[in-house]
Length: 423
Image (tube, rainbow, N blue to C red; front, side, top):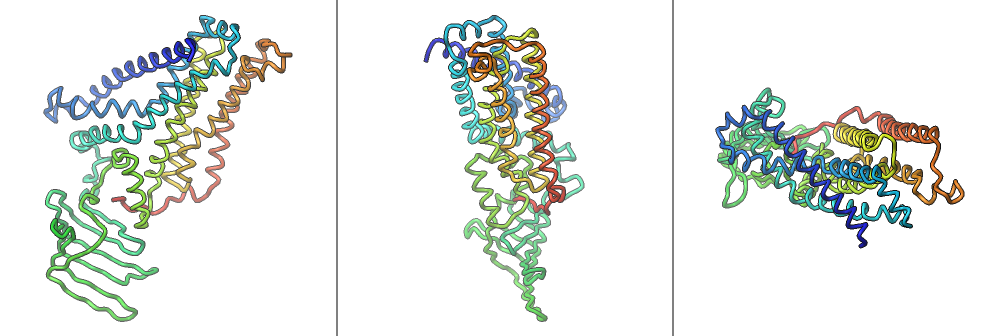
């Protein structure tokens, strides 16, 4: 690599780390001020809060806004280079614009690869630390996340396979005991088997469930047969660790664990797995977005404008906002409707990949742009530049609106599927 490549890569990494650290300080300060009362009620020392909460909170907030940090860093230092006419000097020395973009491509791949590895293995472990603290000390006072308010926190209704359902009225995770248990098998629209028991306990030796005071009811056409059992061993594909209601489950599982969990629930016939699938696909789509936003930022900020860095940052904030908005819209349509999870995770990348190519083709430093001026990099007029900027924003809004219209035309998207609790 040439000195130019190392120069740009160094600026990219230093600016990125600087943005990361500055935002981390701000995020921790804001979060600690909001949760100060909860920390006091938990009676934890400062070191205890850092060890049990913020050591997981910081990596989580990094992963959440990682693409935005990269995008802002690229626009910030590239705009400074353009303002100081460094980019003009680089291109005047005979370096092509494509060659100038190479270190941005390398930096985007490195940072995207770092996020890809982290989101698959490291970040879930950090989220587990944060979420355990959140559930124990903070969410217990939040009615929207604490199911004991207006609901039953220890109640479960699960689907064991395509025809078998099990319900538990009360389950104790420490003793692995369940009370008021029933299990049903259906065939078509009819119940062909019903099992009820006063209690059920997990036997660690045989690794099976043992029911007490159970009653089996068989329904065969017009006949019924009932059998009572003081103790009944139940051999079903249900483990004690699956009897949990975790608000942060999809974020705490590493990617191999998440894929295995989805496959197991699909084999059971469980519905409502769209959120898990979107999370799985997003762990690959978000690192790709890092590379995409890196190239968009380089193309935007490489042009010297009268507004300087302020104009570049304003355009960057608008693009980042549109990207986040499209990502949230596609996620909602996938989790609440029938929009394919794979397409929902990759839709923002697909749309903005087209935007990146459109912007690259219209960069004055691009050789293809020069062909229209007889091989010379003749700058466009002020009127043309304003028209180009207006056309760019119209294109972004039109592309996003078109995709959302196509999604909304699917009538079934507004009819959510019946969702069972995912164990």
